[in-house]
Length: 152
Image (cartoon, rainbow, N blue to C red; front, side, top):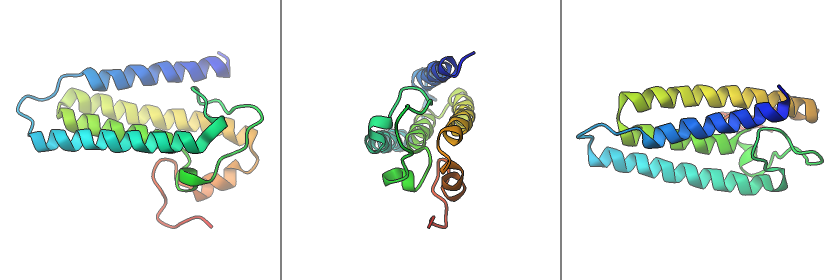
């Protein structure tokens, strides 16, 4: 399978997982305050995704394949994490699981987190091949969560 097809397969799988999370029924009697917390996390995740997408600018692609002719982005939210769009998605995943309170959502949420780790690793191999400076950037910057010690 070509990298382009693999990239699109990641996109389709991501859509299926997120749709499953959004559509799975919630737990009956789940406290309203917990449901509201889940919705709040979804909102925070959306804000993170939008901010990271804007910071990526012309390098934004629908697939995890780097765009020809673009440069590696390491400023804005990319200064703190290598995949801030995925970080936003993962915050949404946590929000959906919290909102739902169901065991099914917890299982699909865990699978989704594992999926994004695999997707990020695949993308990072592509970024390393494209940008010689990527290895140093990756060593100094967290994947989804900022490192406790700031990079220099």
